[in-house]
Amino acid sequence: MSEQTTAHGAQPEHPGRTALITGASRGIGLATARRLAQESDISTIILVSRSAEDLDQAVGQLSEEGDGSTRFVPCVLDVGDRSALKRSAKRLFDEVGPIQLLVNNAGYTNPVPLQQVTMPDFERTMEVNLYAPFLLVKTLLNRGNVFDLIVNVASTAGVTGRSGWLTYSASKSALITMSEVMREELSIYGTRVACISPGRTATALRRVLAPDEDPSTIMQPEHVAEVIGALTSPVGAYIDSENIIVRQ
Ligand SMILES: NC(=O)c1ccc[n+]([C@@H]2O[C@H](COP(=O)([O-])OP(=O)(O)OC[C@H]3O[C@@H](n4cnc5c(N)ncnc54)[C@H](OP(=O)(O)O)[C@@H]3O)[C@@H](O)[C@H]2O)c1
Image (cartoon, rainbow, N blue to C red; front, side, top):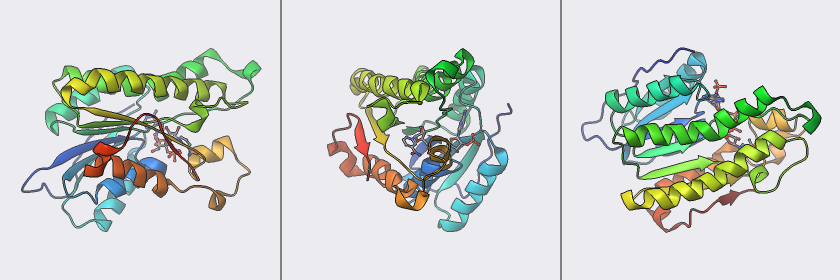
């Protein structure tokens, strides 16, 4: 899997904070990038996904919608590829600079009955949903990065296990607990760690989980992005960040 980074948009005269969002080419991640671009103190947003084409499209849209004050940096990366993730994190830190806001949002699911779960697929689920957020944080910390805020996107399926979603529920449940540990360990650096658990949200991933559902009847990605936006704003410091449930 190739890893590319190209900056789009103006370099602000007074650089503000940098945000990195994984899974930012569509769904909740793209809506979050759009929301964070409205925060005046965020001047650079790094968008991660596997598809260069989708990322270019997302960056094109965001650049058109904005006033040119935010720099968008696409990064083509499979977060489930450990070596590529470590290389990209180091390169982004060296080339783009410190990352103050990290949104671990990329997710994977392949819902099947328990008897049909394969170990490679279980491992892939854990790589993307659990190990990637851990490794991204660890690699950047060891590079000297100091985060203001880390937001891990879990799921209500990680709070209550769902029939047919064994691997997904297990990975999200572990992400919720891992966030609590990160929150305690990183508080000495002034880093806040929040975990959010959205319920049903109209995205491509939701279509995999519930193919027959009418997307207009459930929460939209923008609603989840608003909550992430609130966490990054000054008022976010007053939000108790222990697994925030976001649902209709
Ligand atoms: N939608 C819901 O109902 C719901 C509910 C609770 C929690 N969530 C969580 O919300 C997060 C976002 O999901 P979504 O619903 O917005 O899904 P989505 O619309 O399918 O978007 C997923 C994003 O992640 C990227 N991605 C997937 N695998 C990746 C990988 N291995 N490496 C890098 N990027 C990857 C996708 O781009 P590429 O495919 O091009 O890589 C895409 O940009 C996930 O963690 C999901 O578990 C969703």
